[in-house]
Amino acid sequence: MATSNRELADFLRRARAQCDPARAGLPPDARVRRVPGLRREEVARLAGVSADYYARLEQGRHITPSPAVVEALAQALELDAAGRAHLNDLIGATAAAPRRRRPPTVQRLRPGLHQLLDSMEGTPALVLGRRADVLGANRIAKALFTDFDALPPAQRNYTRWLLLDPAARTLFVDWDLQARAAVENLRLDAGRTPDDQPTQHLITELKENSTEFGRWWQQHRVHQRTHGAKRLLHPLVGEVTVQYETFTLPGDTEAAVFLYSTEAGSPSRHALDLLISWTLSPTVPRSEP
Image 1 (cartoon, one colour):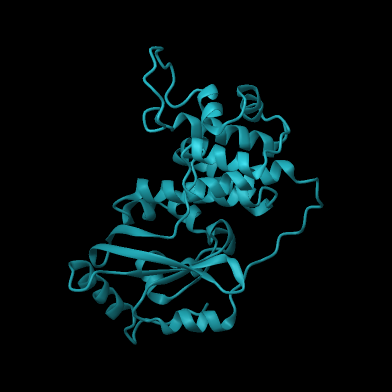
Image 2 (cartoon, one colour):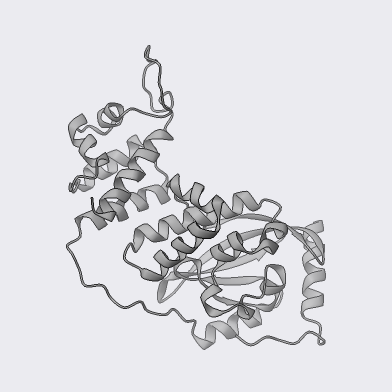
């Protein structure tokens, strides 16, 4: 079975297992369910396809569903926006003709974007690219999380840092939640570019060095980070809860700016202001991008 077919089959099985029969509108069943979720024939019925057709999809057979069938499957499996995008990516990968592998391109920020990050002295800002590679960070973001520029270039990856750096585990109060979301976001990226070698190398490294990664990766869940909150226990200023919003960069849809803020008048705002004051002190040297 080709890798793309196997990924699609695994995703369908995992998604089916996470569905609630009652929420899907199915009547009570006298039969005892030995495993959670929906049965294959139930998904087929909800999607309006034959049980044999759906079974072949889950077996990784070389089948290319029509857009209407893909949408029906997404509805039957109760997929959110990230899940729908991932399903379309996987189906596109199975349908694509063999293509010549392109050499990986290196993502870099324009000098003007580095200047923009430096000018945002009161707002922590990160720029993440493919597979959550850290493309840029201003001084307050480095003080809040870690100095990514001080890491070897091959290790400047947000997901890698979150899972493999012991300091990240102590920094995040909700480390399990944040780390799992990062893994699920990497799943989404990997489905979008299945032949990207740096992504595959990162996945291999994380499988070899993180037991949590291997467990979460097998669950085949996907997540798109657009906004949310992070709870930190910072070694200098104590507890800080930051909200983040993401913005896609014009000219590079594979890079996103993450901006972090705190609630006005809150203890978190006070803590962040202290960190900003310390970070922007003239005695603290500015690190060049």
